[in-house]
Length: 232
Image (cartoon, rainbow, N blue to C red; front, top):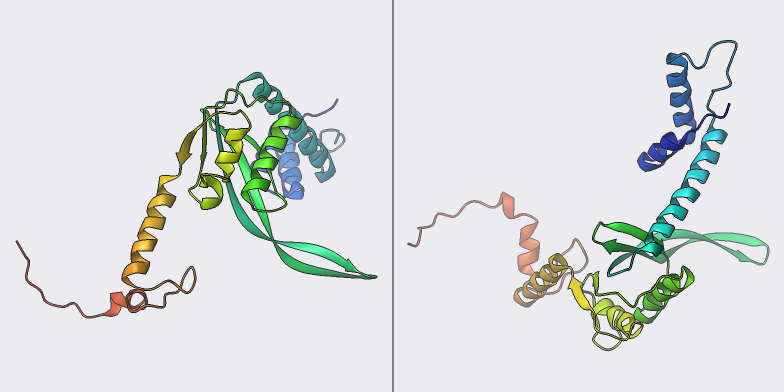
């Protein structure tokens, strides 16, 4: 009798638990409920069985999600990306070298429902490459973009360029204007950053300042409190 481990595989993958640990826990639970006894270990779970189940469940869920997505019109598309540091292996003659590289990663979601679509890594982080990769994905899965109404992302110039930004390039595919849904926290952050740079000077990095105001922030909590009179 085959023991199905669908839920176990999904939960272990969700929480990132090692296959060996999950297999040991699952076998212990089955032993506690009396399904595994000393002279019958047919229901014992090992890491290889769990890995096969995880691969099978992942394939089934991917097919199910793709089938459900293709049956529904795509009306609101949201995407976000970030740059991650990865290790790549290069071969020079007969010697292999490992070096760090920056990889652009992009994820796609649709609303309403916050349904995850897919993620991928464009060859370059340019607007043309990102838009081409997005359009190419939907063409491969034969999902129509003609009913797309809105597209959302953060407010970087790569995404929101009026002539060659990602959104503008995506608008050219269905041949119509789309509603732009831009992330307001990022917009507010950039406004505050420009104000701060005007009052002080540009920063040296993400966590360092070069101006007098910025440098004072590092030790402001240790400064003595100055007496003052309240202005009514």
